[in-house]
Length: 439
Image (tube, rainbow, N blue to C red):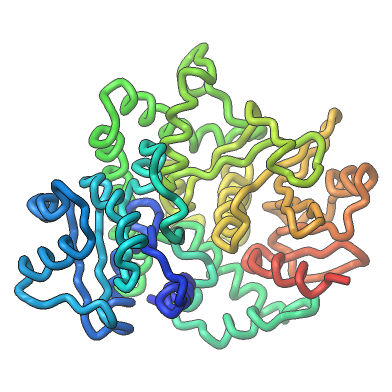
């Protein structure tokens, strides 16, 4: 299955100022598969060292971290000479051996001719624990679950996808095409974007098999909670993680620690939310009452929503049944639109919006997401139904006079003045339309 990040890996390979690359992302989003694809297709030689599968490899990084000595020892271990000019060396699951992470500094400073990629299921957590980690000596990329665009590509809808990618005007699609895309989206909401899940569905069209894989992934996450934290922290992580679906199911999706554990305060779970965030398992969307640039500087860190990194896993945790896929609208509105907001959050992040925020007024108005684009703040309202009501957007417009207003809903693509409605399946167009509407 093709991944959009592959092009960025090619750019990294060809960059003369290339540094060792840290590929981040949650467990089972496809990091190893993607690097294997790159190594086998773009290099004459490919070396894959998995430190979780083969703990003995840790001995290669004991003592002095001389990069050329490390490479020589890798060559002795494999029984081949490692050439720098056309060999990719992949250090996989490096969270098991922290010295591998440290060695990347010396590869950059002393042996930058080597092409090095490092990845780990909890790499964000590992980096966070090492405050002295030399960030300036590495490049970073993050792989997320497959987006809806990648899903369309995987199921063979290349022509339909090509048409969507070239839209430059907010003109409605033919109804039959619009409905077809909404049907695909309903299936995607249920499946999510974990590559193993999507591949199994493509191969077997067995919903029961898909759900079992989702449960297996969730179980693997639970094991990680215990494996990479102490017992007390593991319990708190599990409690918070399991509370996310029911918190999203509430009308007001603002996250409350008291819903995790009775009378709990922020200080009890702050470390937990940070762990889950760095593990790539959650997206935190912070509140803004005053949307000034830079948005991050005006965010209220005490008020936020938490979305999961994958709608399919959210569906599994909520035990959503597959009959919702064939219902015309029910999966969109199920659990107070939790799926839709969660889906939009992960789509916006996967298309380059690193930080997300939402806005509330002193009255009842609330805008689901605020995007920062250059010197603009763009309000984005998400609707799970086909209502034309944009009361909160208009309230925001009256206060701050933004250049454009965005709504993401099941309705077709359309524009009226400075207001644009994007269909749910075309979240990626928000960024393209901002570029095209610059004055």
